[in-house]
Amino acid sequence: MKLVTVYLITQNRSKLLTRAIDSIFKQDYPAIELIVVDDASTDDTSEVVKKLQQQYDFVYLKNEKVSGACFSRNRAIEASNGYYVTGLDDDDYFCPERVSQLVAAYDEKYAFVCANVQELMGNGDLIDRNFGFQSGKFGLEKLLHHNLVGNQVLTTKAKFEQVGGFDVNMPAFQDYDTWVRLLRKTPLALKISARNYVLETNHGGLRISSSNKKKLMGYRLFINKNRDILNAKQLQSMALLETKVSGSKYGFYNFIKTVNADNYKSALNLYLQRNLNWLKITLDHLKKIKLA
Image (cartoon, rainbow, N blue to C red):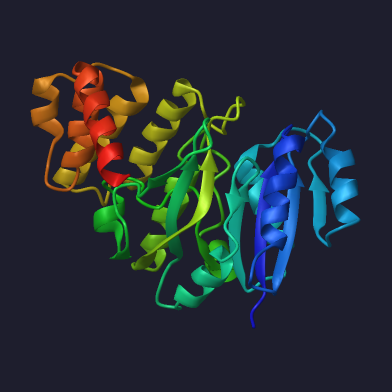
């Protein structure tokens, strides 16, 4: 059984960190190494970690100054002993079968494997999130329309090293950028249908790269890095993404200019949100009733 290293980057979220670490040690896959990198927290994270290390065996590294998620992830990957590497954000958590399901699905022909997620809402409900693609094999053709992966994958340490890890110069879009670079090296990936990662955005704190200014800077860097492989339809999808990031208006003319067969759901959703939000709310409510 091959060792899986889980990197967990944290900063000033000691209350949420315990839940994240607990979820890693509740995995049904026994060969796991956890590396926690503390990005210069100023709260009681160090004290919380000391107590957790009395219960669990894991590595704790603390940055002397705030260095960002990419630097911290790369630091963990460099220190890892695992054949496989995957990650967890400190405000999210794993379902017990996540690691075993990803390992079982992995094949060397894949750049990485990923899964679907659930989002934990403020009222405690778990909502399914697909990021526009539920399951199956995919390559750059699909990925360059939108980030259908999300924020975490499982791949090998060697493949992370082949692409130089996460780009510390990206102020946002760090995950998306890395998944694209992995696929540029190994042109096939797999998304499994399992929903084994729980994402929480309603805990009251900020998620990494949450400012629109950073997102817009990251978007522009992302476009510049991949302009050589973007086709006309993908550029339409990137224009749609820019509209989302910038918060600019998205009228019917813009909708017609950017919509295509690969992004029509995202385009329609954004159009309704920006222009007919009452209708979007009604449709979302009807969808919830149908699913119930």
